[in-house]
Image (cartoon, rainbow over all chains, first blue to last red; front, side):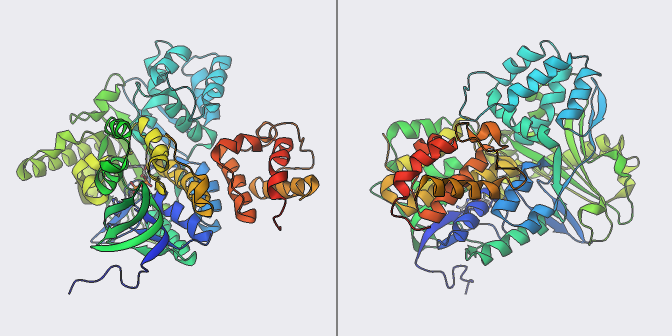
Length: 479
Length: 85
Ligand SMILES: Cc1cc2nc3c(=O)[nH]c(=O)nc-3n(C[C@H](O)[C@H](O)[C@H](O)COP(=O)(O)OP(=O)(O)OC[C@H]3O[C@@H](n4cnc5c(N)ncnc54)[C@H](O)[C@@H]3O)c2cc1C
C-alpha cells in the first residue's frame, strides 16, 4: 500500500499554503505564529523550493541558489524566523568581473562602486551620488514607464562598460533586461548596494532544516510529497484544496506555486473575471537557467582569493539577449570554500550558472538532450580552466541542470527561475479581489523574487491573510 | 485608550523594530520615515503588531494614516476605544 502522506491531517484548516519555497514557508511561519491552524503542502520530497541542495556519493553536496543575497536577509530572518538563522548570514567579500571590457574585484557595495565609478570609470562624484540616490528612492508602486536602458542613458550615456558593471550581476540574479522597468532594477540593485552580498554559513540544507524546525515549533502542519491538484472555489470564495484525492477545507489558501499555474491550472479560469484572465494570460514568465555543478577532490583547496562570485564573459559587449543564448559566452561562477560548511570534510565546489531559454531545451530528443548536457559540461570546464588550472584532473564529480531540471523539481512553467516579469506583480496582488480568501505569494515581478524578495513577499501576503481572517467582511471584492 | 497611551504603545512597537535608535526625540508631526531608518517592511511590521495586540483592522488604503505619530494617534484613537491592552 502506498504511504499516506496526509496521515493524521485535519479535515479543515484556517490556511492552506501550497508550496514550500521561501515565500510559502515564511507566510506559513508567520500565520502559524499568530495562532492560525496552518497546513503547508509541498509536492517535492523536501522543503525549500528553489532554495535547495542535493547530495552525491562521496559526501558531495551542491547548493542550487546560494550565490548571494542582500543584507536585508538578516533583518527578515531575525524577525520572521529566528535569531540562529539570522546569525548564520555572513558577507561575501570578493566579487570579481572578468570580461573583454574590464577585469576587477569589488566588495559590491555603494562605497566600493563609488570608488570604481569615480576612479576607473572616470565619472564625477556628484553624478555617481545622484545615481545612487535616484535608485535608492524607488518604490515598487512608482512610475514604471522608465526602462533600465533609459535610466542608464540618463546617468551614463554611451558607457557600455558602466552598464555592464551595473547590470550584468542583476541580469544573472533575476533575469532582468534593459527593456524592463527601471524600478525593478533599481530596487534590487539598491538592496545589494546597501551593504554588499551575503551568504548563509551552514549551507542551504542547514537553513531549510532550521526553518522546518521553526515551522513545527509554531504548530504548522508540514507535509511533503503532497501536490495540490485543485483549489476549490465556491461563488468566488475559496473553500479548500484537493491533495492525493482528499478534500481539505480552508478559510484561506496561499499559493506559492507559479502564478499562472495557480490561476489557470489549480483554480481554473472560470472563477475569475474575463478581463482579469486576459491580463493573466499576458503575463510573461521569466527565463530559466542552466547550471554545472563541480566538486573538487577532497583536500584540493582553492585559494579564497579566486573570489566568491565571478562574472566571467568572453562577449565583447554586454547584451541581455546574448546571456540567454545556448551559445554561452557568459557565466557566473560561484566558488564555495570549506568555511561554508565548517563541520563537513574540507572540500571546494564551483557552480557555474547561466540564464537560459526553456524552448532551447524542451524539445530535444533524449539522445540530443544528453549530448547537449555533456557539451554544456565540457564548455564550462574549458571556461573554468582560466581560473582553476588543470581543472579536469581536479574534478571529483560534475553534472549539469537545464531548464527541464528546474521544471521537474518545482513544477514551474517553463522552468522559470525567477517567476514572472513585472506585470505578474499586479495580477498576484489582485488575486484576493477576484476570489475571496485566495492569495499568491511567490516570485513575481522581479522585485518579489530572489531569496529576500520571495521571503518578504511571504510577509506581505501573510499580513493580508491575517487581516482577512481576522475580519473577512472588510476585505471586500473590488470591481 | 488616551492619545498618550496610544503614543507610548507606538513608541514601544517602534523600539522593537528599530532597537538601536533613540526614540525620545521623536517628533509627532514629522513622518516616521523622515526621522527613523524605517523601510516599507518595517512599516508592515507596525501594522501587524497593532493587529496582533488589538485585533484591529487596518485596510491597506488606510496605511497612509500611520505615516506620522500625530496622524496615527488621530486614526487609532476612535478605533481603540473599547479594546483592552
Ligand atoms: C539557478 C538559480 C540560482 C538562483 N540564485 C539565487 C541567488 O543566488 N540568490 C537569490 O536570492 N536568489 C536566487 N535564485 C532565485 C531564488 O532561488 C528564488 O527566487 C526563490 O527561492 C523563489 O522562492 P518562491 O517562494 O517564489 O518559491 P519557489 O522556490 O519557486 O517554490 C515554489 C514551491 O512550490 C511547490 N509547488 C509547486 N506546485 C505545487 C503544488 N501543486 N502543490 C504543492 N507544492 C507545489 C514547488 O515544488 C516549490 O517547492 C536563484 C534561482 C535559480 C533557479
